[in-house]
Length: 323
Image (tube, rainbow, N blue to C red; front, side, top):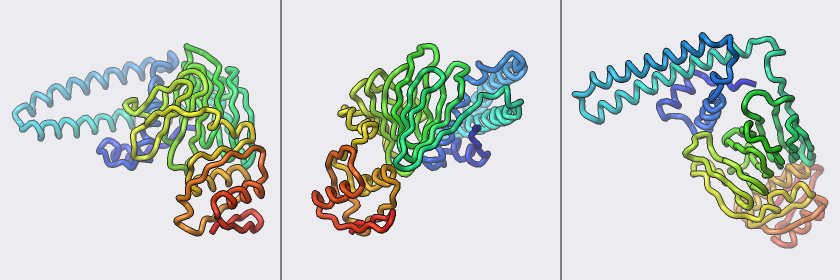
């Protein structure tokens, strides 16, 4: 599936006017283009030559214009060059995008066959990929992956949460895209939680090394065993030491809560049990909850939460109201 980027979106990005979500989308798209020319087959030699020539011409023109504006004030001169660079990036980016669109029209047998799997609330799915990597997909999640890994990368896309146990291959890094983050590994075991409705993305490493963060390399961290990367919107990516068993407890039917607001716990319960939870009181949404539950039914879970926090609730079919 090829991501769609409009001219207006690219213009806002080059002018620094993109929203955080739009910026993440475009940086993800730009990252996916990286290396494509190097991997292009021999018949694309003319395109590659034309691309190189265009890049050289742009560099020459920038030098000429730089000389032409030497007499202008520094701020005005810098603003002029930045504006020119943004325009040139837009031209190059859109040209490359058109090329990618043309490539998508190739006969289907020349494209990588992709498969998308989805899980419902309360469901878990175990997958083995063509490289021998194992993945456990949590409830309300989606994974897109190729039936066979080709080229120089092993690329998958995740929405939701999954435990990855990646087969080691030093010559072909395993890369995971989410809506807002980039993860690269060679061979390791880690849990990645990236639900669209959550306010943060969490990556917890059990074994090996993982590079994690936004698509801009300046906002990425290198994580090792026992570390967790945290990406909150509007904040830099950070890392911290954690108890990794808590992050993967869901794979053993355990439910670990550590100082989480009730609103976040409610979202996890919705994914786990396939219910809708309504919290009527605004104050209750920020109520801090802690507890560990193993192979617990929804009724027992709610009873325990009510006992420990003092909340009151009603259950009507698949809707729980907390007040």
